[in-house]
Image 1 (cartoon, rainbow, N blue to C red):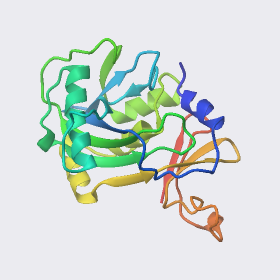
Image 2 (image 1 turned 30 degrees about the vertical axis):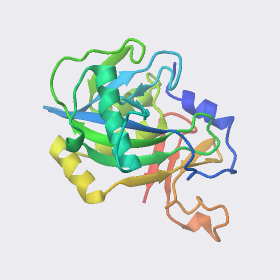
Image 3 (image 1 turned 120 degrees about the horizontal axis):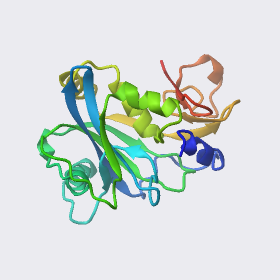
Length: 238
């Protein structure tokens, strides 16, 4: 299973129609469990089985919200789901109030599997990993830059939200810094659209000048995009 699997699938689905901000789609949570190492911060990743949602991909623990997940807002409900899913999938017990909200991702309207996902960061609570066999076939504590390198070689499958999040994490020297920047930055909003670029599929976000197809002069504007036309993927944000 190669790292450009998502790109090949997306290329067959690209269309500019649809609403990236649709509210009537499932909601999920994913949790970046972080720890410091001598080489820098590491994040826990798990490999999904080669079937079902995100088959064969390396992801952060998480999953869709369920009726028993409570909270006053969608973010609160997602936080509760993140705690529950993490324990179910890895055996690790997190405290919801200690988790920092990082981002919220809306998928391209043309992707068949549409889930709005909240990303949270949490510190490693310690304890042994106990993987749920139907949810994860492997796990690894990995430096974000190393995970991106593996993907760039085609050794692992990552989905774009995971890739971009790892890219952002790679800029930080320790876990304290990651939490501090997350608190100061607030929740990042990713309303994703897919476009067909000259070399293949692109993913765009609202501060990219070509996000709005009716823009007067998109070529002269800012860029916030992920080029997934080939490996390694290229992320541009200015």
